Amino acid sequence: MSAATAAGPVACPVCGALSERVHALHERSPADLPVAGVRVELRVRVRRLVCQAAGCARKTFREQVPGVLERYQRRTVRLAGTIGCVVTELAGRASVRVLPVLGIETSRDTALRTLRRIPLPPVEVPRVLGIDDFALHRGQVYATVLIDAETGRRVDVIEGRGAGVVKALLLDHPGVEVACRDGSTVYAQAIREALPDTVQVADRWHLWRGLADAVGKEVAAHSACWAAATATGMRKGRIAETTAERWQQVHDLRAAGVGLLDCARRLGIALNTVKRYDRATRPEQIARPPRYRACMVDPYRDHLRDRRAAEPAVSVTQLLAEIREQGYTGSQNLLYWYLNQNRHTDDHPHLSPRRAARLLLTKPANLTDTQAGRLAEIVAACPEMTVLADLVRSFAALLAPDDDNADALDAWLLDQARAADLPHVHCFVRGIAQGLDAVLAALTTEHHNGRTEGVNTRTKMLKRQMYGRAGFDLPRHRILHA
Image (cartoon, rainbow, N blue to C red; front, side, top):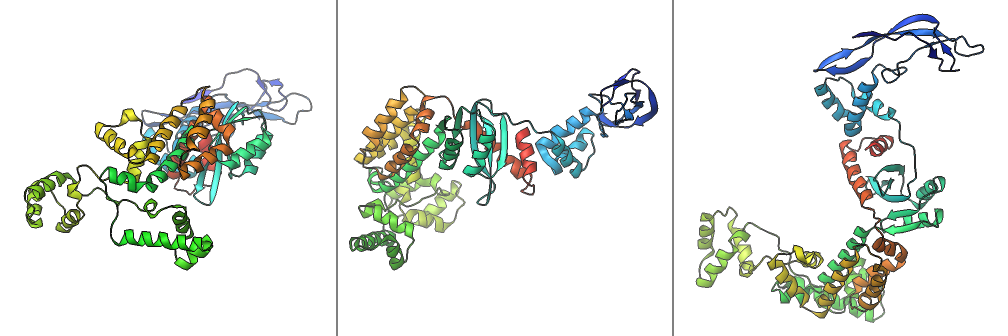
């Protein structure tokens, strides 16, 4: 397609003086968006004009076509915009595979140059700031992302995740009134030092996750109680005997004044294991139910139980033939193992500490009748489980922001959690006490860090798209333009 610029005066790009004195004519051949898959090339005749202003450093200049042609470009603005949209979503190699379908040919290096040429948005510090970190190379290299917690707009992505990095950014860009963060004490310190008047808000999801971890440990510590109530059964034999012996050895050494590290060296076990045995007041708190995972025999459990009840002397070979006719494709050894562990006598699937904790943490309205019945058995197993269930339900009610939650949280901390004989819950309570102001803000205001977690989820997808081969500047471009 051929075209020519219209006659008329044009402003000098240096001094701004208008000129329509033609010095020469030039032809530019930029590529345009394809039509029906056919490549389109424009042949545009433009003028080189003479600047007639006295003292101007630019003697001649070539006119541009704003919105169509930019200086030093071989593509029209709309073609460059289309390529920019694709490379922002797909980066280099994937863009090169997709663009030919649209009728656009380009190379991987050109795609990456186009991506880097897209200007980054200016850093505009929002009123409500969300802050979190993500791993560029897990365990070694991290970065910090800051967003507008109200709109989800990306503010900036900076290398590192220490207090100094965040503090420097906040000092350079003041104006934050509310800062949403996770339970990191590093970010709390940075915000406190840089902007002491900023209201810090803990993330409600992380609060619930912290309680869930404490509940899981308490449920595991009381496995002997609820396992007996739910007919789950505990480990027996050599493993149980070894557990009881080690518990007795650790407590004998501790009673003699031996330190934890010395106990680990003498017994030849890990220090954390010694700590776990030392915290337990009786060996039953260390015991755990056996870990039974779902297997191929589970669908035929009812048939095996009925056959063994009707004919106790029936052979395993006969049972194997019967369930093979029903579709069983497993081995005979697996059936032997299943029957020897008496798993066929269970009326319901095996209950592990993790599943028991999940029942406690699930919203009661979302439980089936069977799950609700098992939860009732767990709660009634011992006084500690009853208290733990009450703590979970009362804390879950606090996660709906309300002005009255401040007094309710004090009551939960003082009257319920600290009074209960639940050591792991006490650890969770101490963590809340360290950042009580941020927790109160989380339970009484609508602000949260959910949008920041969503940005991190998308960031992980972008990082995996590039197979970890990109430097920091390229992921930063894609995150800020996502």
